[in-house]
Amino acid sequence: MATQQTLDALQQAFPGAAVSEFRGQTRVVVPRQSIFQALQFLRHEQGYDLLVDITCVDYLNYRDATDRFGLVYLLTAIDANERITLRTFLNEPDLTVPSAVPLWSGADWMEREVYDMFGIRFEGHPDLRRILLPEEFTAHPLRKDYPLQGRGERHNFPVLTRAEA
Amino acid sequence: MAVADLPENVVVSRLDALASWCRKNSLWPMPFATACCGIELMATGASKHDISRFGAEVFRFSPRQCDLMIVAGRVVMKMLPVLQRTWMQMNEPKWCISMGACASTGGVFDTYCVVQGIDRFIPVDMYVPGCPPRPEQLIQGIIDLQDKIQGEGTIFGKEFKTSERNQPKRALLELPIVDPPLGTQNR
Image (spheres, each protein chain N blue to C red):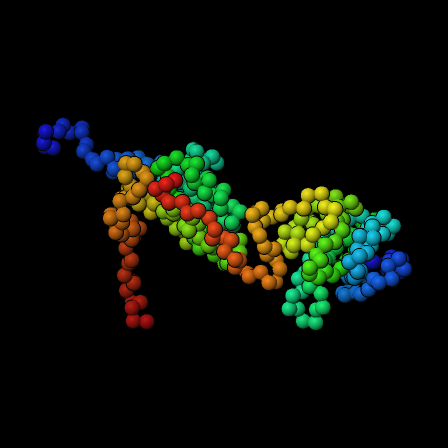
């Protein structure tokens, strides 16, 4: 978990940040407008030098949820051996956040995966293409309103018979 | 010339049967191994189970050097165009074994991206059930495919004589179900 010193500094710099703790894991929720500044603050001033993962949660039809998407950044300070979870919430139709690629080059493929699966757009990303699904795929399949068995994407292929191939 | 006039060192056969006999004993598998079935496929090729006893030990990783594609594992929709291109690159005559539950039906992976059986999109000659199948089961599939090639194959190799399909499997003829041992019937 993060030290109290870090959390105090973070709350002083970002008064809107909500800090909570669950089973030894520190979670900080910041507004969407200040997510990049919060990442930059943790990266450059608090020693959180490793971006472990960027992922997303769709809270559609979730009990007591007020926002649609929760974007999650997992950070680690290697020297201090501390971890922190940074979260922000997004709602349609404005699903854009600043890209974290200027801070961590490794955010490139993580943000492409989040874009691929959830359709979150990262402004300033150098190459925001699909990373796992084919280019011609039209949906974002990890959204809760996407059917589990798809919309027929897995059936739209030519059928090869023995006579013709 | 009547058949009775032939010398003893001449054998008469049908051209279809002769070509099929040559082909069935030298299958060249193309391992299209995408999942855990591929591990069993490797075990089948290794010395313990020894697929070379059936003339099919020469695995080639180029489709142009193969005539038997063994699809071992699930195929996702991004992989299916690759599978179809690989199939089209293989020279005729060619055959396809769908190995395992995933390749045959999609298995438990009934999601948006997993193809629910490769036989929807490419021709399949033999299905091997199992999750994953044991090497013995794959070898049985190869034996059955050899019987199919021998029984139904044509010289052109492109189509099968499906009218001759109603043969019982060789395993059922050679390994008849034995009677229960004496004294066990009345239990």
